[in-house]
Image (cartoon, rainbow, N blue to C red; front, side, top):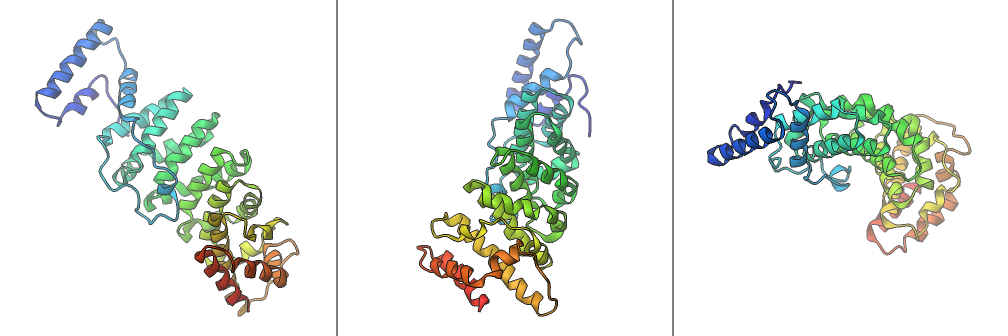
Length: 336
């Protein structure tokens, strides 16, 4: 990463802006600095970095839709970034790396996260070494800094090339997910990153040990946690190679209660897709290999008592939403 030398960076930012306006602004900035710091060479680059941060941190951070697996790959904002260029990113990343002040780190992460919503900047940040700078913030002692780092990684993980570098941080994200408070903002943010990374099968094998915890979150989490963890589980269940790992995992005793008609549609629909994937792949497995499953396994809870599960599905055939009815019917057909 190239360094910012002395006081030359404001001039670089103005090059290309053109016209008398740029010269006027430069002159005004020079007068202002002379009034505040009459000693020649007495300043450092920290105030200049802070000034840049103020000017670029009012962009909007991409929200849940931009970071979900339901969004088509490349569905991030396609328009060019609003004035945030590679040299600006370099300065902000340098500030993030060089300060321990939590509020400054948060603002720097918000700034990088905003820029990472634009496709072109996802490559810039990687090429500047920014992925490691941002991911290192996951070790920060301040929870709000970790949350904002996760939000940045959420945007950056929409990029396939970025995923290849970010894979080394999957264990850390999973560890944070299990250690943090249930239903916390940090937990939701971590699940969003895993949702993006699990869109392809490339890194599924790194998440298999956390499947029991995913199922625990599904049983105990709030509605937003349930939806987010189901996005991950649906992605994993789409991979036939993970069918046995998923079905072997210990399932909560309350798992079947999630199929009640009073459950929110967003949860219910994803849950049915998850089970439909498992059933389809299980039918293929049974044609080649016979497995034995523990009593508390997901397989035993869903398919060990087919009558009870069948009754749950037939009740859902009366559900008011057609998508839910179709998914329930699909599982019933595969059951028979």
